Length: 257
Image (cartoon, rainbow, N blue to C red):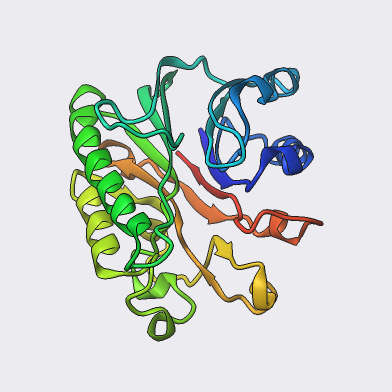
């Protein structure tokens, strides 16, 4: 099973890039973030023509998450239950595979803006409620994969300039602690599990020639439960789409299980 996650930073702008990438890579599952589309505008028909089912939890201009799948998508869910939030940041579904039932969760964690802002407090609160929900979800679904744009670089190795970014959003101690609490539920960071010392990034700022100079961060992650960890064969970051004309500032992150 080949699964990928990709913050596309507007599906209106990058649908053709997504379609071309799907045709080239042929993933079994593709999880998207920042679709920036209302549900009525999501291109289900185009994806169906490529052989994929799809579900979407979106809103106009901001946020938005989707699961695109060769498998039937069952027991679907939008948002964190019990957490009042107008922002569309979570979608989940269950698939039946030769490995058994697997719960797929696609998330777009808030950015946080700055550590002294209300948006940072919202980010921490969102992560707290997400972790509480996920703990229960993992009891119901022993096999689970959580993937998306976490907006957290878990370690200094995941940031091009740890000293320069120190105590800023994406790398602050409280965000990293929140990430560790998610991992401690019984999950593994698939990329770091297979590539313990590799320096590679999934996001580069549009400014200051960030991609050309490799001023990046690894903030897009695929977390898998311990039942699936030893079945991970490959975990990579595909920088190809970041070289496209009018690219997303993120690159797809992939695993094969």
